[in-house]
Image (cartoon, rainbow, N blue to C red; front, side, top):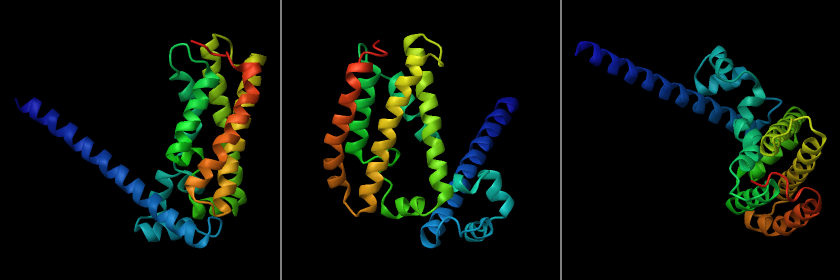
Amino acid sequence: MSSQHDSASARSGAGLREVKKQETRQHISDQATRLFLRQGFDTTTIAEIADSARVSKKTVTNYFARKEDLALDHQDAFVAALASSVAARRPGEAALGALRRAFSEALAAHDPVSGFTGPEFARMVADSATLTACVRGLHDRREEALAEALAAAENLPADDIVIRTAAGLLGTVHRLLFRRIQQLTLAGLPAQEIEATVAPEAARAFDLLEPSIGTLGTA
């Protein structure tokens, strides 16, 4: 009985520690974002973030290896988004169809991963060469993940020229749509108006791909 009690207590303690770690991580991220938006990403230091979060600099760097990770804390979701849509496609649905549907849903939801980050955040990224380069790298990583998903769907190697070309085309369309949403955000348009503007543009962009890769990945 004692052994079972000790085991349950250990699990409970581990769970509480994990919750505490997540709370600390979120608190640091929130304080960093507040400072970035107020005084700019490039001019904000790790020391200022640590002071604002009331933790040590070492604690900040233990949770976030790079300063840009503090600003772009949804990187994993962004990188995985397209590949996940392909992997979760419906029976008989092609990869392009799944991606079109996912983008429409993200657009209607004003999803930050699709570009709806708000004007302050969009301006922060646009004003920082470091963050702009980081976002570009995330697009590259997302395209790589998409290529792997397409390869799995077609049972082909990820370096197959058709797979690489399809991933490049789909990645480019999503890059352009993300950039378009960001541009309209910086221009001061409200989210509903951005949605209404981008929806027909996205449809035309995806239509261009239908003749070439419209059946790729059909389950």
